[in-house]
Length: 212
Length: 212
Image (tube, rainbow over all chains, first blue to last red):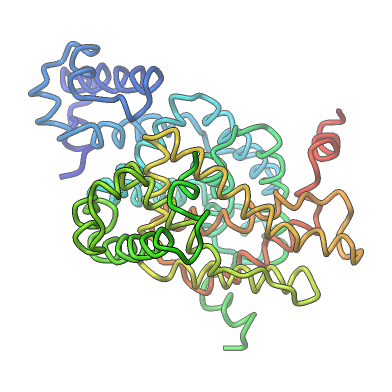
């Protein structure tokens, strides 16, 4: 059973859904106040007014909670459709930058990545979550292929990983601010790399370089 | 006092240095067997033969140990000097890929990133470490500027962040294998982006796009 199922998505609008909403809102607030390091099930129970036993039953622990919250918030970055791939990439890049300017969202991704290191179930959730998002946003590339804007063997998944990578590097490794300049340079870089054929699908990408 | 100072770099070759070597080797082995999740000071004491009290006094905890190990291992990725920036980028990209093909090194970076989320001192260590590496490898770009290969306002730090980012995305977010294809696509992408002017220094980069 996935965390999403466990937290009641099968009964939208019902009591289960309201409980989930209250709990995830509490997690988000707690992340904003003390970050992941200070997050405890007890604090979430107190803030949300939901029994501790219910929290443990549905989410197992703080790691399950933050993963579920990530899924809930991801709708805040919509799929652009401007008519050209470079502009779509720029709009998406800016939306990612705005998303992570909020310290609570920053704490959230830190928490999920950190959880994934220690907990195989959190690792699977993280991998699945980003694979799904990558597939969704990959439609930008598919549309560009259909418009004849980029070669048909451009790999949507690689393009989307390239667009996200600089933000996660900034957040998790360089640990600096996600600023508008990063969004601009990332969009410019990815579009240039797409045109240079950097993200061709596997069977052709290798062949280009080493002649296989 | 930094972890590097605390662990005895002031007395190279002496007993302190040998202790550090034994302890870091033990940390590396333990990371290979159980990852960061299973790492304890007790296990490191047992494997290295160094007293637990000594470990706590010098490194404070497992987080101090993994940060110190990261510094020690970073010499495994040498600075290329092939004569052209695209080839230097390719050599460096391949070296990073080889570095992270070892599961122990993968566990190590996971551990440090995870530690940084919970411990401000680890966060500072991580940020400082990557800033220093970025400055070191940035010489590739400085040399290319001197050769007239790329514009003088190309920002070495941004280029190096762009070269590292796809690897850390693959390791920490997509949680997939770091393969040779990633090294090739990253090198191709970064060189294309450099030529497209994606990594210009701050005062000109913003001006290009929004007219400031």
